[in-house]
Length: 368
Ligand code: BTN
Image 1 (tube, protein in one colour):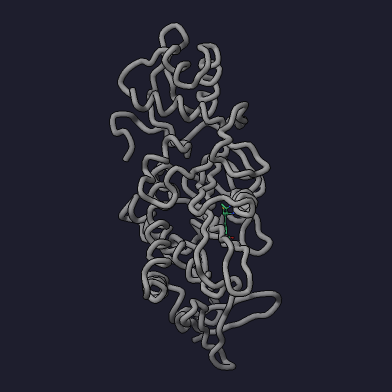
Image 2 (cartoon, protein in one colour):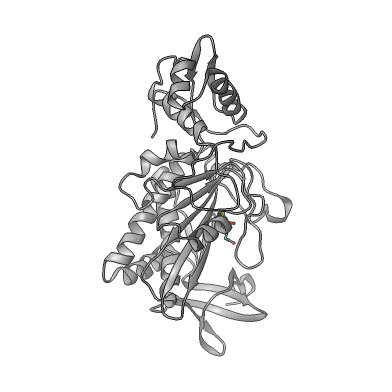
């Protein structure tokens, strides 16, 4: 938990995004979109470090190498984003609540010791964090680079689907990984990401036990709370880089009509708001654990497959229908094979499903 002394602004106001006039160029991988003005994060950090006192405009101006009127302008921008800052240039400023913004200055300290430490890139508004992460990886972004956005205007799901990305309601996160794995083993990494999401949710609220639907959905009460989109650039025998994109519905209170019967948020599931900062920190820590063990420990692959099977109600004994590229497989799930593919017992015999959308086959379930 962050700064218990301060209440948490768990929801930032819906205002126009702020684009940075000055951005960090040193460590920011090239993308075609502007990351958040780093001075906003620095001001928040400074106010958090002096949470119980009023900080003068002059001190803040020194901190960001600027002047008091620029500080006032930036504080106004922060307020526009829902950050609760009291005061004005004559009196100084004080933070009244910890903002639930995924700024590197807020999230970064919670990621010490992980592969993501000091590699958080934040955007108020972006097309897709996966697209940005793939572009950055192509230009050499280092392993562990994280792309987070408050809002996506072209969030992408698996297949041709889009991903509903309401501003500051969800977690929209993509990480760049460079594992020394053959492309055939990447599915296991994607399954490990699902385990990481499930563990993160449980860590933040122990009452919530999510289900895993092969290959990449996380469900609560049968509805989707998280989707994972894994993309890679690889040669025949070697992965160059992988981007794991994770969308978690955190504080949504409604969804568009087309998905409302299938989607759920953590807030809907529990009846109270969640801190996206806490969810993001727990997520990145558990991804770090899963990823390190996968690339460092012999036998980790086996453990991932076993845990996925244990933690998913879909992997064994579920009546399913799987559709992929016009072909359809119907039957009862019979576990995962050694590469993580789903085995389905059908009327024609055992089939191995390589990808596709798995749905519960209610007709089969009733008639059997
Ligand atoms: C799915 O279930 O279809 C996968 C959804 C993945 C959504 C996330 S949100 C962050 C990242 N950026 C994207 O454009 N997509 C992924």
